[in-house]
Amino acid sequence: MKRFSFESRTVVRTAFFLGLLFFAIRSSADDLTGNWVARSPQADGTSRVTYLDLKQVGSRITGHIRVTQFYYNIVESTGGPDTFILTGSMMDGHNERRVRYEVRRVGDALHVATRRRPDSELIEMVAHRAPAGEGALPARLPLPALHDVPDNGLARTPPMGWNSWNKFAERVDDRAVRAMADAMASNGMKEAGYQYVNIDDTWQGSRDAQGNIIPNKKFPDMKGLADYVHSKGLKIGIYSSPGPKTCAGYEGSYGHEEQDAKTYAAWGIDYLKYDWCDARNLYADEDMQAVYQKMGDALLKSGRPILYSLCQYGRAEVWKWGATVGGNTWRTTGDIRDSWESMAKIGFAQDGLAPFAKPGHWNDPDMLEIGNGGMTEEESKVHMTLWAVLAAPLLAGNDLREMSPAIAAILLNTEVIAVDQDKEGKQGDRISKSDREIWARALSGNRQAVALFNRGTEAAEITVPWSDLGLKSTPPRARDLWAHKDLNLSGQQYTTAVAAHGVVFLLLGN
Ligand code: GLA
Image 1 (cartoon, rainbow, N blue to C red):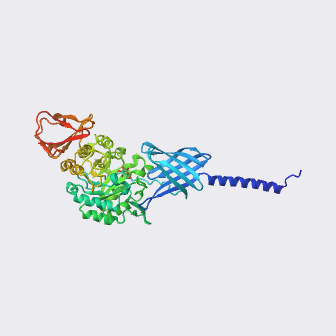
Image 2 (cartoon, rainbow, N blue to C red):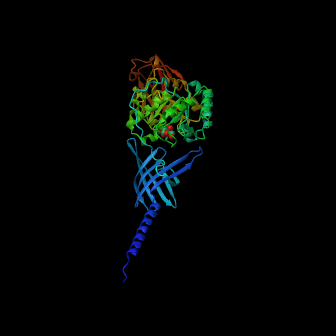
Image 3 (cartoon, helix red, strand yellow):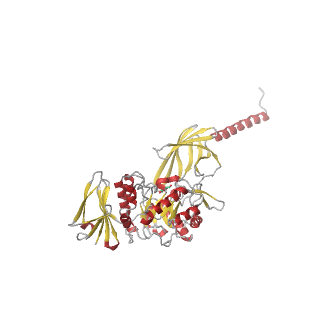
């Protein structure tokens, strides 16, 4: 048999290696390795973007998924060859957050399905190949050394106003903000002390070539809008994040702190809510103070008095350092929802924080849900009362154009507002706890406000002994702030019926 010549052996070998190479290239083109992006256009001209940066080895997939404020490590993958279930994990402060994505290869695209929470609706999207590195987290910028940011002189009493998030969320736009300013200026709220009209997340568009932030389509003229709100004798607030992205996935202020503060000042902005969000992917909770200090300095440098509202969900004991970074208010909790359970869980957990509140610097248990439909009238009174005892910001979160008289009477109870706004700025605290809680707040003029809360589901009698309030005898003057009536007191204590999920709120004086 004729042996292969040298040449034919070479040809066979070359063909073999070319074949191998072909399969290698083909399978790497067929596998999921690479950067993928899914864009869902939104009505405001921006897109909700999800990046899947994947590496496939055999049937195992690793990499990252980035969407809005979240950046997940893929820690588990099952399935194949065309459909995989990916488990993403990220640390959110000291807590782990997990997510599940189903990805299916269909031609040149990836069909992706996920849920924001295990019980929420299925989100489906189609991802296409994107250039390597696009959508990656930016490098972590170094943080400044800590120092005390000078007091900006604002918020001598807790800020009052309105914020768009609770009612409008991503539906807030120029028209809605003007309408809320109109309502606030004409329905008695302005006279009662409500002042700030605050735009929350989802106003941002993109940055121009110089890095200046540009609002999206919903806000065609931010300066014009600020002028309008000012023309009503009111003030206007805005929202951003120290992270690259806000919680809803819009442009944050990361690396643009001074530039953004200047832009806000140029527009005429009076208030900034600064929300941690995506900063969690670059910094630890322990870095928060330096991160927040950066914007505190930037706002002062902007040349315009801008109230600084920290929003980092009460982590890293913010009440201990919120004032030193220039904060006028700092959130002490996660997000409130429009329900008795959420409001009560947050509100009644605020004990112990009183020593940290003072004129210019306030604990913030989140915005009001009064008038959004999820609470009864009694429950709404509890909400308003508790926030007043806590010297909390009073930021209405409802549609101010459509308030029932009952809701208006709660938000506009000037006697309760006067407790919240007491000039001495001493936050109240819990006196006694059970299903029936008594909270008290010392007020100027040697007065105090006392709230008798019934957290139970049945009406109940609640007794407050004067001695529990540090009083030696019956206070000479007492007034019921929801009944708007003076009371004639005698004896060593006061006993009253309190509705289920209700409150009796007293002002005691001499
Ligand atoms: C976070 C904040 C909320 C609101 C949303 C907006 O969840 O805590 O108050 O600002 O972001 O995306």
